[in-house]
Amino acid sequence: MADIALVTGAGSGLGAVIAERLAREGLTVAVNTRAHTGQAEAVAAAIRAGGGGAFAVTANVTDPSAVRRMFETVAAHGTLRVLVNNASYRPRQRLQTITEEDWHQVRSVTLDGAFRCVRCALPALIPGGRIVNILGRNALAGDAERVHLSAAKHGLLGLTLALAAALREDGVAVNAVSPGVDADGPELDRCRAEIASAVARLAFADAAEVTGTVVCVDCDGSVVTGATGW
Image 1 (cartoon, rainbow, N blue to C red):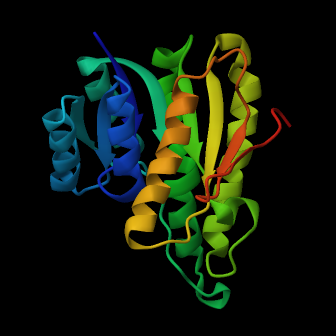
Image 2 (cartoon, rainbow, N blue to C red):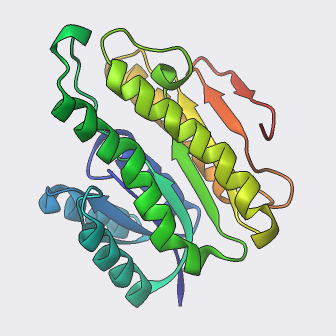
């Protein structure tokens, strides 16, 4: 059976680049998208055309039933070894315009969706699995135009650290990558590739040695690793 990496929100952008990189490392990649099945199929087809293994899985991470079905599909293709929680809802809004519904929608995708995926993934990941959560500048420094996303991403940071402590004895490594993206065009492509490289390193890191770590990638060639644990 194939060793599988599931990447949420991988139908385009950074998620697609992460999926492609993990496939180059020899993992079969489950390319998730909320609803744009054609995009996910295109990413998976490109990976297969390059000699890798990949398949598309459509599921809205805000829907517990859809998440469960997604993991059943993954299990039919092989053994889940890596979960990358990349899915996020990132509207730019002034604080005064954020409604209760806006707040809950952002949290439901970005934070609650990650937890739903972790909960379904654990039976396959124990022991020796890897979880990599994608943060961002707004998680660590705050973003005045994305207050709800900043809160949800900071919650994802807390989830990363707490899961690392809770799953250490089960042999599951839980880490995070915090991208600093401020680029366009070819520079954006290079930046995404740099972030995907950091994710790939964590996907194969020794679970006993690297867990509860936040790797900050500022896309200037520097990588800063945060202290392990709380």
